[in-house]
Image 1 (cartoon, rainbow, N blue to C red):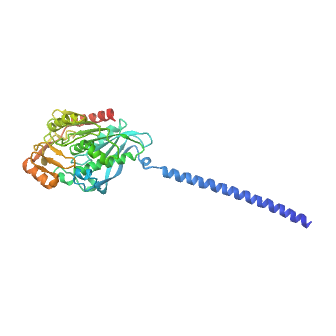
Image 2: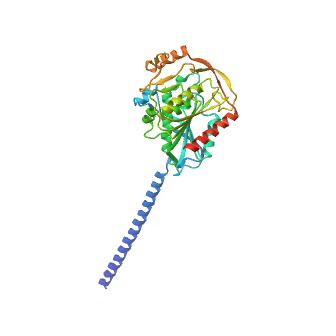
Image 3: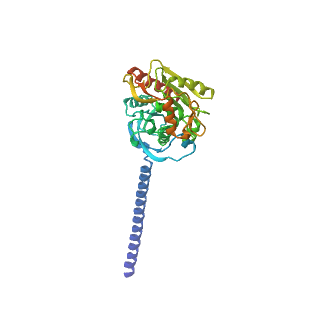
Length: 358
């Protein structure tokens, strides 16, 4: 009997052991499943990219850029700028997903990018399925405007900002990095031209180039002595009455650059002053400097600007260069302004240009 009980206990014990083992296996299995789900959840969270946090419409973004670049010589010589973060407005025609879209960087001029025109242009591009990014080169640097003193921010730094914006766009899932364009107004127009100079793009573009560029009433006074384009489609939009950045320099520059292999054209709007994309009428700005009477300037292979006419170079220092030019040919007083009609023409031209070329 004892043997039977022992045997029964053994059998029962064996059954309980088996049951416990089975239960343990089930618990382990459930725990493994739970861990697997948690891992998958973690993976899903890791896959939630910055792009997926962006929404259709306007997004406030931060762009890592640089500071303390004095001139193009700093870019060409590979000087590492001090890191700085600038603000930007990113306009999306839809949520940022894997669907690759073209994009345009809109560079402001000597005034604030908060003017309504920038948002209106960006939204018009969005209506055609084109992403728009408006970087703000002033805000984080404590600058409100540079018309009275362009020495507050160098061209080199502005170009660096533009390529930083380009780099930012390439991090987004919804941007086609091979279909990015750039446009800009006045000083921003200069940046739009110089950003497609091979000497600068090869240093800052990480192998990428702008597919199309639309400089609007830029200064075309300065040309790289050995100019070479990145094979970007360029079209300048200028004003016939511009006394700030005269269109005549751009007409001559286009002729020269065509002989150097540039894919470049120009449209001059009859009766348009500098700033013709503004809805407000033209008015005299007595404190803004122009060097339109100084003749053609050049940038050498090292990145220094020079005037053959006045025998002065930025290699001698920016202060000496500017003072020499101001004394000999600079003057204050320019006309700036446009009309609702010119503002609409500018936006329409911009949308059509990038729709055709991106």
